[in-house]
Figure 1 (tube, helix red, strand yellow):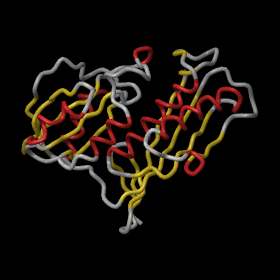
Figure 2 (tube, rainbow, N blue to C red):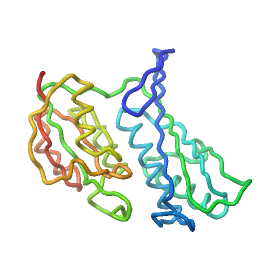
Figure 3 (cartoon, rainbow, N blue to C red):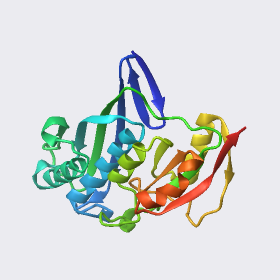
Figure 4 (cartoon, rainbow, N blue to C red):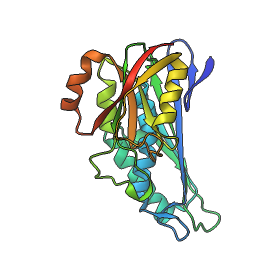
Length: 244
């Protein structure tokens, strides 16, 4: 079995199928006394699991397991977080009783929330390459901390990523996190050994995108005009890839 890395993903390849492992974590965000950003456990569970599931779906992997490692007690905080994970995963048809496992902290009192989520997906083929001539776009808007809301129509979500992945003209999809749009675009160019003719947009490309509130993706130019009709989120053109 070959083991490799693609971005933040670990890939185990046994030729017949590929296992893809993604993870995300959060600290000092939650309902506890010493948390810096106050948010209820359900919302925390939804956004943290959303990031992991986005990472898997973006490369074409079907999620088969979610593991939550919660540095909080089960009652009440852990149950709230788990409820959020179940709610988020159900949006794409996942059954929590089949795929969800995890652990909580029951030995010592906890005053600040800590959470880690690992997701495992399975795929026959991974979508992780862009090509010269592709257009680089961004779906959603970078937001972080108190700006982030579940009902915000401007941010990327699981259903949008799932819909993107189903479009054959879409090549790479990259959820944007704390390093920002500019970093992820530069990494995409390096991976594919390409340059990009940039187009200025109103997006803050250096701002953290928190829990993947936006994604960059590459597409064939022929599909551009159809995208606005398929998605409610704002889509901005960042540039065109070209040979170095």
